[in-house]
Image (cartoon, rainbow, N blue to C red; front, side, top):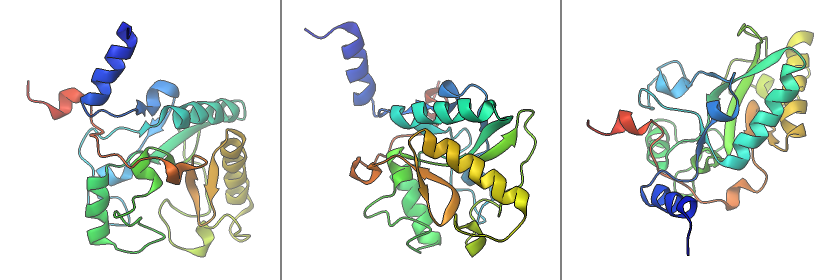
Length: 204
């Protein structure tokens, strides 16, 4: 007979919340800057609702916490730009910018739609900006991990982030210094659950 925890989990899943956790619960000092909840992104349009959270699969959240612990010892914190993305939002992004390689085709879905990808950067312990090779969501060659140009500081910070994320078990995206995936993420199911808190999505 199922215990209370199993019943609660079943109700949680049935309610459509999905097996996702808030990244700020796994990483208490995580800085959240969800770029697509503002017009400050390459689409030049807000496509996320107010209150969009950094939701991730539990495995991704645990690995993120491990990377954050490593970086904290080096004087850095993590700032996330994007985490889980409902497939309905993916369709909206595809309508605006239908270019595979930069926006995943929603017919198949991308790893963000699975809660298995995170876009992020480094900040100092007090939240100060850290120089990176390019801004977030740059389509330049300078955004590639193999880019040898730019400043020494930007390459150093890119390498510090890469080492921590790969050390925690993530896989880097070769074209985007900020993007990391769970291994085997493409085999996971695409989700379409809300990423705002229940009180923000239900009428009181």
